[in-house]
Image (cartoon, rainbow, N blue to C red; front, side, top):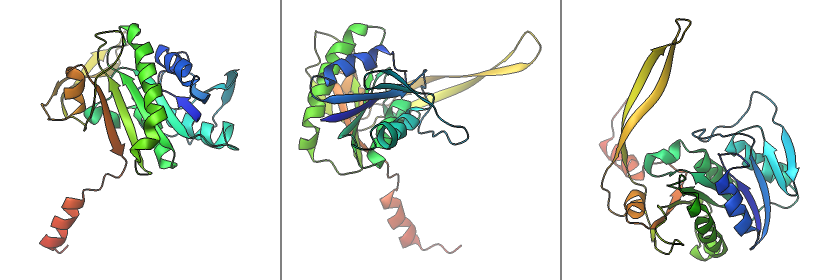
Length: 249
């Protein structure tokens, strides 16, 4: 198995190092990761400046761009003669569930791999303050990567995997889930700097809705959530209703 590994926390992040070690036991791994943290960068692509790639060891590279840039550089640059069998992003330092996947640089890297027709997974760990969870999460991820082809997922479907707080020495329980729903109460905090100029912090409180079969429900129960996602946002039910209504514009 030829694996392209990236993340949004940077090449020296503990989650990436843990999963890299386990993946090297099952295949050849090429790491192309950001040279700095790129959390909440979503699916952004750098178009207005050149990107730079630096070698950081055998099959290890940093890119001064976003996670999406890293996948592009990995597939079409570093691995252009032999494209990867799978793109793996993570392990993210923090959860990516519900609507948060739209902000996530970790998930965006998996989206980019999926858009290229490559099998892809995004990995996230809900409790990075307890680093003991990274190693068992990495072991679980490696097993899942080996069996991914057995799911026979459509070409444009990828997996978002969230690991709960570690209760024992390994993650044994898992559920196949759907995205949950998180309700935000966003707050824009305005302050004044020492020079009298305004600046702002975006902050917010969030509450999870109780959605049956959701990713949040699974991790709350101590299970790994495995959520298949696709990028086609089309609401086909709405198309049918709009055609039936026949509203003239």
